[in-house]
Length: 423
Image 1 (cartoon, rainbow, N blue to C red):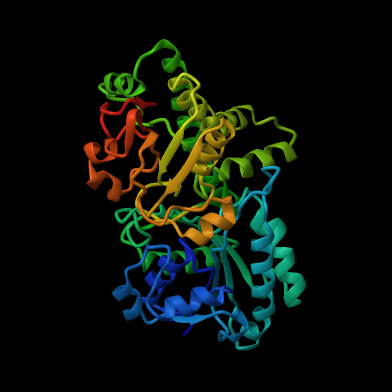
Image 2: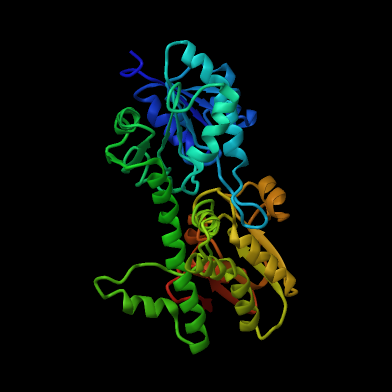
């Protein structure tokens, strides 16, 4: 019976899809598909370049890996986990989701002919309405089948936090939704089997889509407030971290901190919600204000560092390029914007990051990473991303990279006030 022993295909094996595929493979026959042939080759060798899955875990998993969905046998569930970025105008780019939908649509008919009525589940972050209003017509067009009759739709938003080994897919609560009550139960049974956190059954697909997009929009707005007060307190001449330490003693004060907002979620998802709001004739003032503050933070930090040096240009070593510490993820790195802004102010900037892929850094941002940690001396050393490698060096070793009269800057406050400059 396919209901008790479903066959599942996961389309997209990045930060979201690979951990999900491994979790599903522990319970069900699971196929992992990614069009990147080099990615599939690396995974077959037991190497995950995202650093999320350890080699032994990957090599021992019973997953089947393919670079062509059409080579996969007919499945009961097709789970789409491809990225949903924004374009140069900060508008939603649904190109990969549509492409994945076309690929799934091409294999739906064989599944139906085998006696299965498959469910297509989307995990990619989208604005409310995309699954039913954009993806469903593509699936119908390519397959020649009818949504809600021959195949069904579902949505279960991803909640992967790169580098987080505590809130993994097998421990968190999974929000699930389905086109019909019966589909909702089928989807709940699959996700409920792989996580100890249980499932939350959303009342509709649009509700589940909306829940995901506001989770990150909420964080973005709160961080924007922190960034705004950091700018205010800088003018006053007091430490933001000292203020937060004092305010944090109140029981209901929310522990957000200032900083650069990059990555593929928090810096992207609010634009999806804002786009949908404008379609409905609503001006998303709060959302866009938060985005404006956070997107401008890199240039503000660059100007503050420049001003702290009295406007004198010099040599700068930027430590870290990834969007957060201890991961290789370079997507939407705002440190790249910061390095560029410092360069535009006339500084000679060198960037080092032991976690980042040099080829990707060059391709995405035109930044040539230093192969080894440069020894300087530098007029400014900026600890932008506190990778464990840098923290293990310690403050004194970082200061040893400075020229006489040079400054040590700490973007995230990890040096606990011992830096010459911090937010």
